Amino acid sequence: MQILDGNLVSQATRDELKIKVAQLVVEGKKIPHLAAILVGSNGASETYVASKVKTCEEIGFKSTMIRLEETISEFKLLQIIERLNNDPDIDGILVQLPLPKHISDEKVIHAIDPEKDVDGFHPVNIGKMVQGLPTFIPATPHGVMLMLEHYKIDTRGKHAVVIGRSNIVGRPMSILLSANTNPGNCTVTICHSHTVNLKEICRSADIIVAALGRPEFVTADMVKQGAVVIDVGITRVEDASKKRGYSIKGDVLFNEVAPLSSYITPVPGGVGPMTIAALMKNTYSACINNN
Ligand code: NAP
Image (cartoon, rainbow, N blue to C red; front, side, top):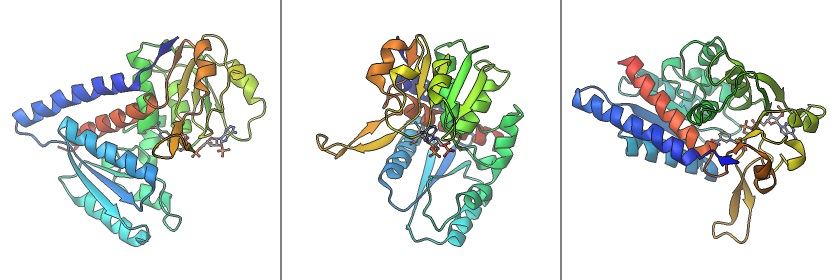
């Protein structure tokens, strides 16, 4: 069994970007600039945005963090996005999800200029991804693909089971794994809360991507010997033994599943850091495309 080390692969990607940004500086060209919008004060969202901004600094990107009150109106938020769309210095815009109930995720995602949509959630970019055209690929599935590529995991002809069909993780993941690319060329089954016989389906998987947000859901009896197991889940679970009062759990019962698997991602330190690395790659591409 080999651990797929997201920290290591993410660092390699970030080091590569650092060199590319230094080159832009030498050439007197524009450096990438990411604008991150955080609405309200959700603990997990705060952590994600802070770490995205910190990574920008580490690589040498510019970043602008826009913190907005939980009560901001949808109209006001759309106006801010419009301003960022029209600002030539901003290359990438991300709005941290989830948004408060009174704001439509859909309206906000649709308002971002597709050329600056570094999260890759805009329907134009999703459409391009489905057709295999160059575009911004949603950061988490993109990060998983970078990890498979880095470890040269053979995916061709394999049966991949993706648990979860959200627009930001499961669905794009299933499309990328089924694409005529390397990694890719899998035969994909996508599962969700209405799937019957999930255990049996998982047991037939060469590759499992668990992205359902149910801590330790995937157990040993769902995994065949030698499977590749990618755990996307991140859930904060109350834990009085921790100073911060919670621990982070993935969707896979790691201790039980790891001995069966050929490769497995830990949580934390697996897909999470890869998501940030992929976002940075998208931001770099946005800057190069727009200038
Ligand atoms: P989501 O929007 O809540 O989607 C969850 C999906 O899982 C849905 O399609 C749902 O099915 C399915 N599901 C729920 N319970 C199930 C069950 N018992 N059996 C089979 N399918 C089930 O979640 P998400 O945004 O995709 O995120 C999934 C997880 O990934 C979360 O833990 C999230 O925190 C984590 N995440 C991690 C990263 C990272 O960087 N590592 C990034 C994004 C998200 P229905 O469609 O039928 O409801």
